[in-house]
Length: 435
Ligand SMILES: *Cc1c(COP(=O)(O)O)cnc(C)c1O
Image (tube, rainbow, N blue to C red; front, top):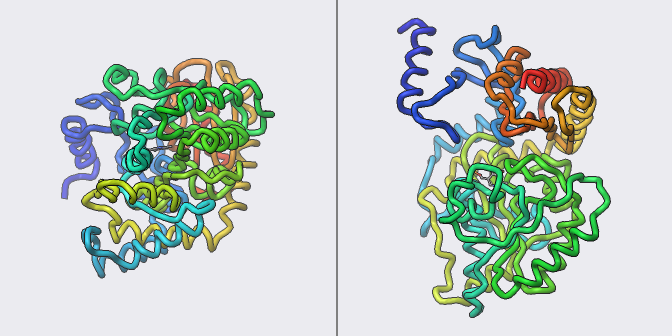
């Protein structure tokens, strides 16, 4: 056995030489932290960083680990399913964890979103959603309806069609602007979950849907919270405006709830804030409690029947690992944990903790805005974050944060105790001061 420190140094050298990290250069520039294990809300590092061996996780591994790490119930579900079968193909075969999860998602989802297509990541779930919409109109003899409308400031994933509906200016996709399908963009929704709806903006949405209806297959948005496109919150009223405009002009409505689903905003699905049922809904991220990659695209009978009237009468998509038994079994156990527990109370508790803890950031130099909704807290700066400095400051305070652009933000696991929520807020302030 090599010295642990030597092993760590060797792993980091191999990492730098061979491994791409998200949105990273090759070879890597900044050394990532090496995580040895994780349990509850804590990540255990192989080597101390800024004097810390353990970090409270403020990111829930990008919205996903809502129950924390190494959870005995999820571990047991995974072990039990591994002993039975980790995977079988979904073409021509089916299995209990997949069937039960689909039925359950159909029951939980708003309205009549009752048909479930499993995908292996959020981006693929978005691709499937868009394919459903285009194919729906093509099946109905309206092949010209193949463009999409969205509002600016969105994020829907990194695959090709998903990128085309991400914010065209900010974000990481400007590079491809000439090569991507050209979609129709509305202005970003006016900020503020509680802000009174802006009638002028609502009218502009209606007008844009009406003007482009003949070429639009669907409107796709993230309801209530725009995540990786800028961590912005908006009034649910605009979702009702979109629903009405889509109904009036024969356009499908897609909600991408990959980040917002499963309680993060204070409602089980963000669509519930608006009382709106979309025609298609994407889920992912927290679906397996952060254990495995799994996503789902749900649609209504109208969409499914429309597609089935076409030639070919099938949805032409089928990932190799579709409906993976291990992932669907853990997702089932994660939903048990969520729904048998008091997720709404926990999210509310974290919301108050973040409101109190982040409020002092308003007085800091360089801070443009501080906002909290559900178990999401955001400090927006008036300048680009100095990522290494901000990360170091958070780590020195015993917390893992991963700022981007002008944003220092947190969406901790729902099981984060009050003192750790306070610690996260404190670290976010330190990161804002250092950034
Ligand atoms: C993360 C995210 C995606 C992409 O999901 P991946 O699993 O990373 O492919 C799509 N839409 C939204 C709203 C997301 O937050």
